[in-house]
Image (cartoon, rainbow, N blue to C red; front, side):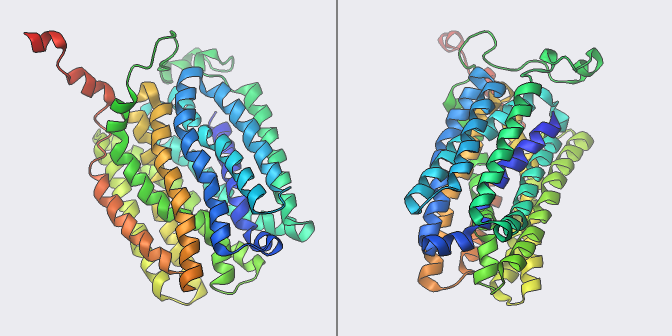
Length: 420
């Protein structure tokens, strides 16, 4: 199952970063400014944000399997359509459609992981699956460069859209909602896997209100917003940053961008492994999640500073790689938090978490594009990212994954006790 989850994350981010990797020739062919390109990048975030919340609820209500089947069809079609665009409007429409498909997918994946992975291994599982998303980031620039040399930037979107459809067939055939429903799971394996925590199995309403879940998730959402604001600089602008700021050709830009993204692959897996190791050694859930996130944001902040002052390509590439590595340490522990605080509604809680990320992906690209067009500086947005990372470190202290929604509701005084 983890292999299927990892393949899904890989394809999701290959689809998403394709636009950044093809931005140079696409921008030239369509005659777009940096601000217009930023608008196209951010269009994805509008529907992505909305369908984080919708998708999380749908996954909790109807199951991850059916939710991801619908999502996969949408994101495959949207990816192919991006290769057929004729201007800014059609590009934005394709990105909006992609946001619908991908927005609901990650909360549904979190719901599936909750069903298939026990708590002491969830940080590792989230780190591993997200490391494959960063592998998709790393593969996209050289893949697009090869496809551009072979045919055109349009071919890259069509090829990846077909790859998405092939993965969807595997999901449809192999995945089952719960371990006990899968013929390949032995009784011995079943004893090690989570007991059913799906909230809608008996047709009843959700056991927790959205407000109760949001109260436990709001600090985590704020931290993730700050982290993703900084990460969006990598996802949306990295290849074109190397091309226009450092005057590299598309092949060199692709190689340097891939190097940066490969650092994120290692960071994702490392953060989840460290978080779960701390949990096993200490039994302290708050320490396991919060300490790794704090170190992650602090490391990203430190390695952004040289990018502001250096003009050497190698130095900048190494510092960006280190910054991305540290920022990605956050992914495993922070995506485990929704499962920690709301295991029965992990899809909804994960949707709230990634809603914060989606809001960052809406705002950050537009601000980045405006800064570049107004000042001519490609490094100034990194100064803003440093400020957001400082805020993220502060908000991290209020995450408290060791306090679940259920614990808080059990502590509430009942009407009978109040009357007494």
